[in-house]
Length: 190
Image (cartoon, rainbow, N blue to C red; front, side, top):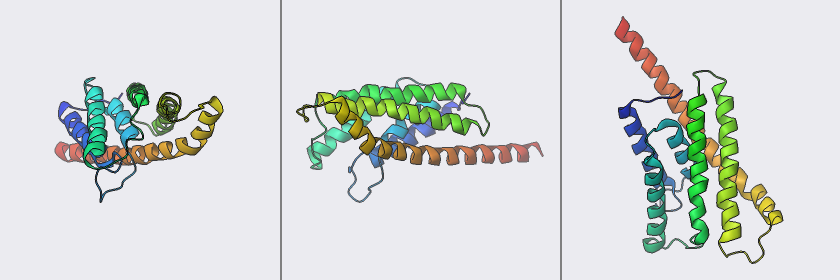
C-alpha cells in the first residue's frame, strides 16, 4: 500500500494543484500542455489521504474554467448543465486511484495493475464526462448510444493518452524518489 508522510503529501498536493492550473485548457496563452486533469484526480486518489482534497481540486478546476471564460475569452461551449457530470467523472478517477493505492505493491507487476485500473477508470470517466455532455448539455439535438460509441472512438484515446503521459511521468518520478530515498538511507547506515 502507498503511504506518504504528511510532508510529502503536502508537496504532492501543491504539485498536483499547480499541474492542474498549468494544463487546464488554454488558461496560460504561452503554455499549451495536454490536460492533466484526469491524471491529477487519479494521482490525488493514489497519493493523498485527505478526502477534502477532492472537492478542493474540483473547485480549483471550476474556478479556472469560469475564470478563463470570464477574463480570457475562452468559449463557454462546455458550460452547460452537463458540466456537473465532471463530479462523477473526476470522482471515478479519484476512487480508482484510492483503490489502486490499496492494491499497490513495490513490485514491477504493479505497473500492469496501474495500467488496468487507470484504463478502466478513464473509460468510466469518459462515460460520465463525454456521455454526460452528449446527453445533458443540450448541444446535440438527437443524442444516441450510437453517437456516444462514435465519440468514444474519437475522443477516448486522446483522454487516455493524456492520462498515460502524466501517469508515466509520475511513475518515473516515484521510482526516482524511491531510489534516491534508498541511496540516502544506505549512506546514513554507513
